[in-house]
Amino acid sequence: QVRLLESGGGSVQAGGSLTLSCAASGGTFSRYVMAWFRRAPGKEREGVAARYLGRGTTYYADSVKDRLTISQDNAKNTVYLRLNSLKAEDTGVYYCAAAHQPVAYPLRTPEYNYWGQGTQVTVSS
Image 1: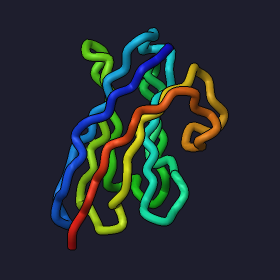
Image 2 (image 1 turned 30 degrees about the horizontal axis):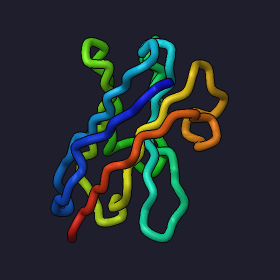
Image 3 (image 1 turned 90 degrees about the vertical axis):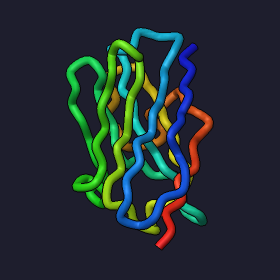
Image 4 (image 1 turned 90 degrees about the horizontal axis):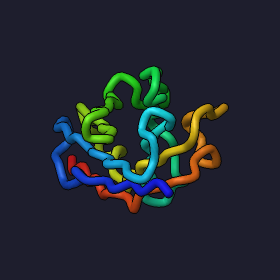
């Protein structure tokens, strides 16, 4: 059973930055694909970034790829999401997710078996 714990959310002004963390436990870190999803108010959950932890291949949604970076720290079994140049529309709950490799569509919700509880990001303009 994989457990995921997000942290790092908060309130920030537009143009600012945040780094979200997702600590994983209960599995072999390198065998997973991990991703970040977000649910904006009134919208469906969408995938914004994913990473194959073994080989480091990354995937980004087109709408955010110039502003977000997903990375990992193997020693800490942790995946990070760095959000830069934040906009009001980035506001939402950010979720960390994990799935056994491989997955066909790394940014799609049904691919993932394990989910964190979410962390709120609020961007004020």
